[in-house]
Amino acid sequence: MENSSRKLILLRGYQIFSGIFLRNPILITGLVLAPAVVAAYSLPNAAALSVVLWIVTLPTILLASLLSRFAPGLPRAVLPVCYVLCSAVMLVPSYFAARLVAPAVLDAIGIYGPLLAFNSILFSRAKHYPRRKKPLWAVLDAACYCLGFTLAICLVGALREILGSGTLWGVPVSWDFRLNGLLMPFGGCILVGMLSALCRRLVDELRRLRAWLRRLTARLAEKKKNQLPQSFGKGE
Image (tube, rainbow, N blue to C red; front, top):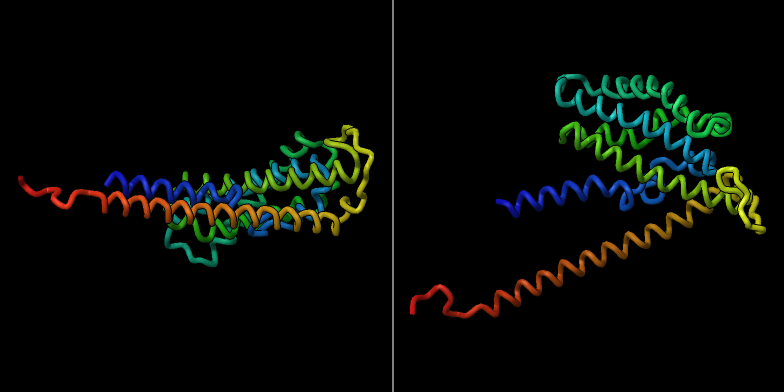
């Protein structure tokens, strides 16, 4: 009983925390590519987009989980409308918070800030996950996806700013080489594609390692079972 409950907790933890790396919304699943490719050409832009995503997504996921738990009779056509209204309302405080983090970048991110109110993370997780899990697990799952988005977009923004502008958060760095094309959308697309290929390779290697460890564990367990004395359990 304890082993089964432990396996269930580990499986649930794996499913939730996989949103950070194994199912990263930018580099693996590609759920939120446009802001990273077009608008995240500097670290302040990436930070502002991350703040908007966090504040928009988490309350909406919580609302979706509560509706599926306490109002299961709502028509499915009504649920997306509720999600959109909640995310649109949360867009206002998210912009105030983003202004505190990076005051001068809200005009630079353009339409891609408001578009995060209708991001694919929100609708994919709100549609499938909260119907089966408790609100706490739903919010934790969404937080891991938001964290994965933050790590990926900040990495992309920092690389594009350093290599393209020679600065990091507006501070000049000792880097004489410039790749101005990285500041353009096509440069962001190439960089995201290269990082995505690298991450996918790492994910494949991790899955192969996990499969190898499973086979090794099964062989050791079988070997240990075969080494048991044949007279085990018999009276002398």
